[in-house]
Amino acid sequence: NVAAGTKFLADNKKREGVKVTKSGLQYEVISAGKGAKPTPLDTVTVHYHGTLIDGTVFDSSVDRKSPATFPVNGVIAGWTEALQLMEVGAKYKLFIPADLAYGKNGAGRDIGPNSTLIFEVELLSIKGQEKK
Image (cartoon, rainbow, N blue to C red):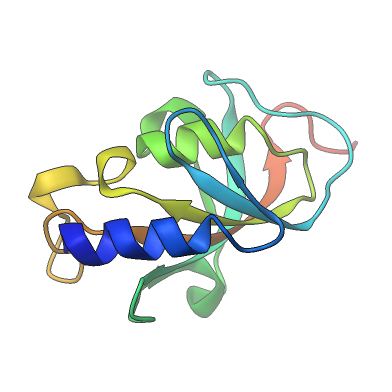
């Protein structure tokens, strides 16, 4: 998984529209949002679709038709970083290296050790800042 993930990320960062942060997180803005950006202490509601680099879907709130709500600092490091870049209404595609995801431990039966993960994430709302 390490070699495949490293190669994928090296090739991916050359694609037009892909931005890379200091941590190594890669992201692509699918659609921009308007309004507030969450802080690490905020609770957000998102829709997401997660796949491995081979396209295997391991989790999807979109498929469940049920958005997820959680604290920004209560998820994997790649998400915590990316969510703070996003404005409400934005949709990003995230390419998360293993060290910003589940690392050498992996997660569950679908995410093996040292897996690079891909997520499409749409930031629906920030708790306490919903439109009234």
